[in-house]
Image (cartoon, rainbow over all chains, first blue to last red; front, side, top):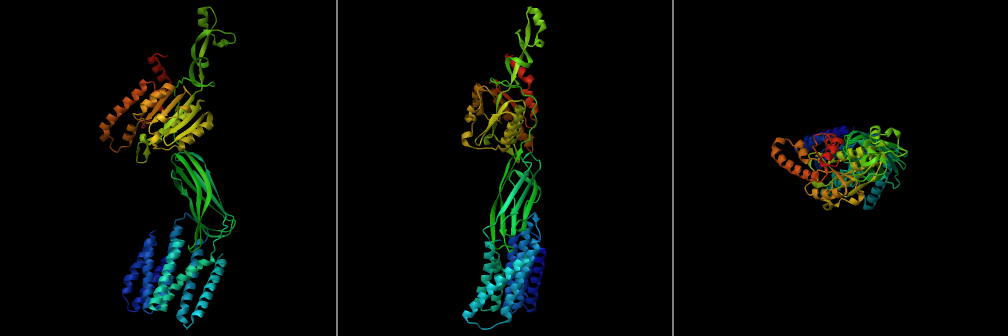
Amino acid sequence: MSKNWARVLILCATALTIFAGVSGGHWGVILLVLPAGAVWLLNTLTDRYFWSTFAFLGQLAGSTLLVFWEQEWTGLIAVTMVLAAWDLDAFGRRLARFDQVEGDIEKAHVQRVGLIGTIGLVLGSLPLVWQFDLSLGWALLVAGILVISLILVLRGAGHAAG
Amino acid sequence: MLGRFRWAFLGTVASFFILLGLAVQLEGVLVLAVPFLVFLFSNLYFDFRSDYDLQSERTVSPSRVSSQALVTVRLDVTNRGPSIEQIELMDEIPSCLEFVEGDRSVIAKLMPGDSISLEYKVRGRRGFAQWQRLSAHISDHLGLQRRTLPLESPGHVFVLPDFPRIYEIEIRPRQTRVYSGTVRTKLGGAGIEFFGVRGYYPGDALRHLNWKATAHHDEPITNEFEQERVADIGIILDARQRTEVSIRENSLFEYSVGAASSLADFFIARGNRVGLLVYGNFIDWTFPGYGKRQCERLLQSLARASLGDRAIFENLEYIPTRLFPAGSQLVLVSPLVEEDVEILLQLRGLYHVIAISPSPIAFELAQAARPESLALAARIETLRRAILLEQLRQAGIRVVDWDVRTDLPLPVEQALGHHTLRHGQTLRGSL
């Protein structure tokens, strides 16, 4: 299940990055993201973790380029998907090493990654939609509150998930 | 990539985005670090505890098997402590065993009181396989924190050597023990084989009266039989690396071990007191004894036997002769090298010696892809070996030159059987 999710996310992230790049007139992004996506997709079928990590970095580079081309939203979504795909791909490989996978451990993992990806996306989008000037002291206070809330939310989610 | 490596990798990527964002002063690049930071911070809700309490129990059934027989290994791990988000168990299989089927690794979530089980089948070559502990890795879902808990889960299995049964070996040690057995003692008394006649003493069984001799001598003459007793037998297995020949996965030493097992089984089955010395790596001595339990001890010792290349044991001169009672029967199982002759001749002065020598030449020819290309070399080596073995025979050592392509009982019974012994004794005039 996690490998299938990883493949879907790789496909989506690759397609999204290429679409955003090409629609902005930046055809060169295809040269970076398409091979990385293809290599990564092929590697989800094998055990070559090394190349998957390179492909992951290639995808991140492509997503970063989108930010430079003023497509921050697309870049953030692509990065989140790439991160989730990387984790799910690695988890799938990890599970493949075991003869026995007990219970719904894979489902729980996918749910956890989904939750973390969503929180990451929400928190990442906040600065994009809501920008205001803060002094350093306020900024530190807000950062502290955010970190504590994040921990509390995740702890609550973890307990709820059992 | 798990644990600290994963932390470091994702932390580096997040830091890179932050530094890049600050350098180019683009908040969009800074924002890219957020999913990574959330991923890393999510780990904080998962707290490792110090009171994990896992108990494991291993069952190996059967714990004593013959070569290539299936052994079932079952592992039960119970969580007596707090809940564990993810536990990975992977059981290592000892080198002399081969995995056949089943589950030997598991990843699971363990709630307090929960158990997980692994069950798999293995089979093996001769040896002593031992499990000591099992590695349990505990981690969070995202693999950012990871801890290894060593779990004591001992277990063992003896894979005993395969051996053919021998039905006849005639031995005549100088000394026997007092208990009745099957070794003839050259002494008159109770027995089966006719030994001689003597005058009748009151109390002799009337059914043993020799009526013809009584009639001839005009006084009562009774038959006397040869006493049969048990003997002390020391089996010496040569485990020196220098005598070993191994081609691909086949080893001449395995034939020696099989022969020693056959001999142990044979002599114990006939009530003798048998000890075993494995000479090579160290002095591996199994104290002499009788019966099935001793047979089991000997076979277990042979299952454990391994080759050694200690310089001090390069020659047979350090065989500890004090371990064997004087006059007892020694059986050396060794491919033999020329330097061994002198030592064996010295041993012959103290003991009755039998040498069972698996032929390294026959072994190499059997394993060779094109044996015809080795014909000349084989002839030369065969002659040298024949000279070596003849030296031993002339000194009164009974030698079995075993072509390992044939089953052991045939050459052993031909060379050491009852008729061969009597024939040899007749030729030497000692019968």
